[in-house]
Structures are given as C-alpha cells and as structure tokens.
Amino acid sequence: MKGNLIIVSAPSGAGKTTLVSQVAARDPRVRPSISFTSRPPREGEANGLHYHFVSREEFEAMIVRGELLEWAEVYGNLYGTSRTLVERLREEGFDVILTIDVQGAEIARDLFPDAVGIFILPPSFEAMTGRLNVRGANGQQDLRVRLKNARAEIDERDKYDYLVVNDDLELAVEEIAAILVAERRRMSRCREQASRILNTFIE
Ligand code: 5GP
Figure: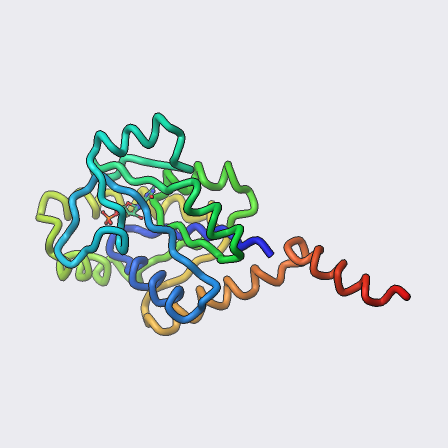
C-alpha cells in the first residue's frame, strides 16, 4: 500500500522537529522527509540528517530543474522538498512527514489533496519564547522575526486536519502516532485491501 503524505507545520519554537523525529523513531512505517535548504547548518546539525545543506545557487538550480515538490523562502533562506525522495518513500509504503512552513503546506495540499495536515501549537506564548531562547543560536534579530511570524502562521491552523498541543512531549508524540495509525485505516485508502480479501470469499 502506498504511504500517506503528512504535512506538519508549527510556529518556530513549538518543538515540531523533536516531535517528528520521535514519532519516526517509534513507528518504522514513518519517515521524515529531509528538506533541502540554503540556510547554513546550526551547531549540532548534520548534512543529510537534519537537512541537505546546499548553496543558494544549487537550490535555485533545483527549482529550475523542477526537482522540488514545494519550496518557500523563510526568514531569508530557501527551503524545499525533493519530489523524488518523497515519491520513492511513499511508493515503498512509508508514511512521509513533511515538516514545512505554512506557505509550502499550501502548495503541497494543492498537489496532494489527500495529504493529512497536522498543526502543532506550543502550550503558551511563554513556552514558545522560552524554547527559542534556549535554542539561542538564532540571534536576537532572528528571534524577533520568528515571534512576529508566529501569529501569522497560527492564523493558518484551520487549513489543517488536526491540532496537537506540544505540552507533554510524550503525549504529543502519542497523539501524532495515533493520527497516523487512524489515517492508514481510512476506508478510502483501504479499498484495494478490502477487494483482495473479498476475492478470497468467491469460490
Ligand atoms: P529552521 O530554519 O528553523 O530549521 O526552519 C525554518 C522554517 O522552515 C520552519 O517553519 C520549517 O518548518 C520550514 N521548513 C523546513 N523545511 C522546509 C521545506 O522543505 N519547505 C518549506 N516550505 N518549509 C520548510
């Protein structure tokens, strides 16, 4: 069975990266999509693991060659999803999670109307600013921009199918995992399987 496409968006500091990697770690049928970005790596980020880090020129060449399923400019850097990487994983039966901003989500939803959208919220504004300050590496100017953008991103929440509040990490991971399991059992996605079973009934 072809895997589902899951779109996860959240304001910066909602903890979406940790959440998604924990969901993938506990469910072998789930793979996070590793985006391409022109942003330089932060401390502790590895090429090919957190992102595929490329130059702005390389990224622009990928756009021209039509290699990106969606892309967007976020905080002055380019971010995008590889079309072939996602398609290959889905064909292999994996549910693929795109952790992307609200602009990219809009494009992905148009291309894949049956994609499942999950919006993550931090439990409060204080919790979100706290997380951003702990991360620290972004600089004060960057921090201000991210906080300003958070409100605009949150205004897009109604375009998603599910809302998960990342208060208790364990619980939030469990909720996302449960959403993925339930989405696999949607009748519209299981028709082929049902037919195969029904065929065994015919003598
Ligand atoms: P960060 O620089 O903090 O890793 O990411 C900044 C923003 O870019 C986040 O909202 C993140 O979800 C988004 N982002 C990461 N990868 C992609 C992508 O492939 N496409 C789009 N549209 N946004 C992305």
